[in-house]
Length: 96
Image 1: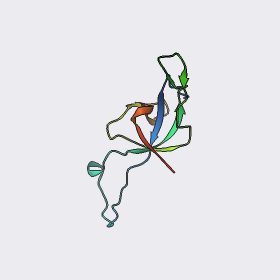
Image 2: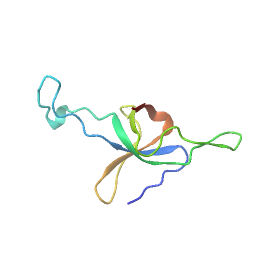
Image 3: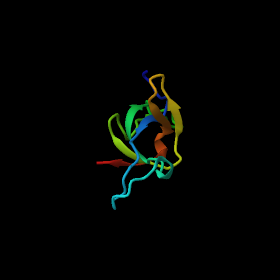
Image 4: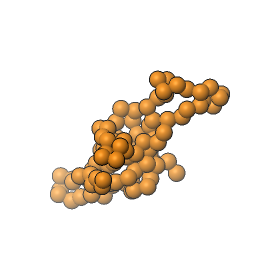
């Protein structure tokens, strides 16, 4: 299912949470933190400024990004894929 976000919204697929800590401890599902890193799968056309011009988004499809812990709205596609729809301003950084 293809999703086209509107305006300055972005669709992100969250990356899997770590299952093992750096010290080698295996984390159960209840102890895993919500992931804050994801890959962009779709981007809207951009933010409409007061002047009527469209400001293109700084991110593009395929970028790995960091976002706030409780950012966005979670959705599940028909295929069972879990995605987040958020505004571009909720993205904190692009991972290079």
